[in-house]
Each structure stands twice: as C-alpha cells, then as structure tokens.
Image (cartoon, rainbow, N blue to C red; front, side, top):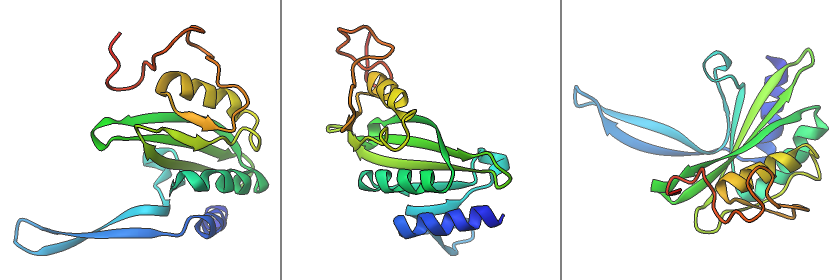
Length: 170
C-alpha cells in the first residue's frame, strides 16, 4: 500500500483534486450529499476495477503525468479512446503499470471536445505509445498533437472514416 500512497501523492501534485457536490433526496426524504471527483486522483478497488489509482486529468496535464510515471518506473500498457457522443466529448485513456515488488496500475482519463479531438502526444516519453496513439487515431479520429506519423496503422491508407465513433455508418 505504501507504493500506491506515494504514487497518489505524486499525481496529486500534478492534478489537484477537485470535487463537485450535488444533493439528492433518498426514499425517506433525507437530503444526501453526493461528491463526484471532477479532476484529481482517486484510490480504486483493484479487485473490482483492475487498477489501483484512477486519475481524471485535463488534456494539458497528460504529458506531465507521462513524465512522472516514467520517472517512477511505470510503463505504458495502452492508450485508447471512448466516444461520449451524448456529452459531445471524447476521452483518451492511458493505462500505466509497474510490475516490481511495488506493483501498481494507474488509469489516466482525459476528456476532450468531440468536434476538435486533440491531445498532446506522449510517444516521446513512452515510445511504445506511438503505435497506441496511431491506432486510437485510426479508430476514433483523435489527433495526437506532435505525433511524428499519424498515418493509418490498421485501416486502409485512404480511409477517411473512424469506425469506433458511435455515429459511424459503414
């Protein structure tokens, strides 16, 4: 648990914790306050989610997070996207892992506008991210700013579509 706590403290320096509070009424008429993490780091139940920490970050913070993860012995497992069509947003998800005696999995999520899906590349920090970012660009149309080559990786060279967008029609 010490490793998770130190990683959490490190990431909280980069991504300050922000919580929104809403009030709801339960069945008995009691007012309940519900706190929702809107940005920052949350400790997650590894047994239920497969990760130890979840980070909700802005697009501007992903490079600093990638640097911090590399400096502390984490490697990049994957990069993928999610199309939140109803919210008019896209989400880029980065999975980091550390496999030594202090094993810890960290998921970083960053939301971006759906109409201009751009986020900085991290492939200079984590070279393996190059292919992950190209695949995410292929399937979701997310542009990784500063990426050296976003040519299609899995789709045909002349593809002008992104098949994992929820409004994609073949």
